[in-house]
Image (cartoon, rainbow, N blue to C red; front, side, top):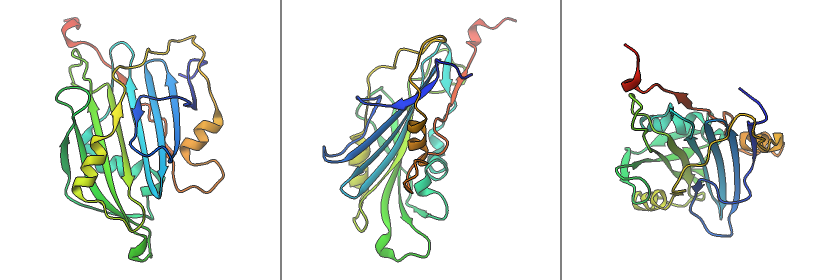
Length: 231
C-alpha cells in the first residue's frame, strides 16, 4: 500500500549500513520507508574501486524478511546493473566468514568472482567479492526468517588483485547500526523524491553502469505466531 507513509529519499546522515572506504570516496545512500519495512541502497566509488549494497529491515509487529543467504550468487547477478548480462562473471569457491560485529551466531557469506565485459581484453577484468548477511530472527516466527539483512558486491580497481584475505578483510569491515529503526506508521509523513529513486535504479540520465533496478526490494512478510493459532 502506498500512502504518505511511504517514500524514497536521499540519506544525508549515517544510515543503517556503513561501507568501508577512505574519506575521499564518493558515496550515495538512498532510503525507502514504509510501514513495517525499510530498505537502503548504497553506492561507493573509491579511487577506482566500486561497491554497491542494499540493507533490508522488517521492523513492524510480527514481520520478517523473505530472504536467504544461500541465494548469494543470484542476489549478485540479478539485482545489480553492473553484474547483469552482457557482463560475464566467473566464480571462485564460496567462502564463509565469521562476523565479529553485530548479533551473536550471525555470519557473513562471501564469494570472490571475476567480472569481464563481453569481447574485452583481460586488462579490463575486475576482481570482486560478493557478500550477504542475515540476522535478528524473531523468536516467534515459525519459519525462522531474519528481520535484518544486507547484500552487495565490492570490485577492486581495474587490474588490481583481490586475494581471499583482502576480500575477507573488506567484508569484516562492513558495519551496521546496533538497533532497528522505529517503524513508520500509517498516517506518518515520509519524504519522497522521484530523483532519489531514479538514482538508485541507475536511470538518472548519465549513462551510469551502476544501480539496482528493483530497489526497493520490499521483502517484508507478515507471520503468525504458531503458539497462538486457534485449533
